[in-house]
Length: 265
Image 1 (cartoon, rainbow, N blue to C red):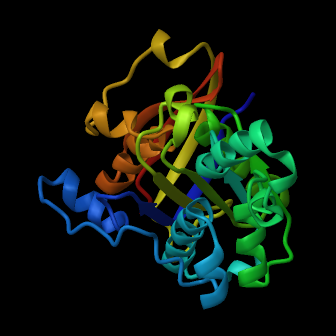
Image 2 (image 1 turned 180 degrees about the horizontal axis):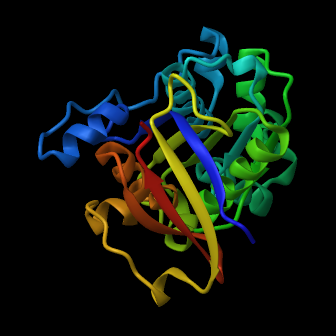
């Protein structure tokens, strides 16, 4: 497969320690950023929807809005790819417990929010987006798989694409399985062509094998990446903060992706 080349125009980041991409950049420079409020603001959502939406939706919508705002693009016209390794873990824990004890008492509202594409639904309704949207899941490789999907769509359709990757903290017995102790979300706006808002050029090259076969050093502490499946994006986000470099991501269990970030003149 030939290398894919796309251009980054917008970046969104949120975790209990990082309010946005500027906070990540400051943290990588040794500063201690001010932590954000406990719940992502997600101000794109109407107030009523924001009160009712689960944390998984707020997290995804928050980072999506940050990335789109940085790009200067219109969200309504942009196709989007939403990825998550585990979806809404709190709701899944609730549903498993209710189905095991009193199935007839299952809340239809919570069931509605349990589907994997719930964040995409909230986002497209709030922004009036009628462009195509995908929801991708590939366990710990979800960010890499989503990046591959978004880059392919941007090049195939010759239009910018929004990529969102997020995972909430594990809850209940599921937490022992998902190994996701903290929420993390990030988003990228990818364009097939350079423009006034271009932050860097990504060259993606697929290579058989897994990450452990060829580890690449990252300036991000390993414990940051271990906090959430979505945080596997941090090595690439760190490169974007620094301007150039190279990292590897998983795009599937046995398929790695070499990612090279190049500065644009």
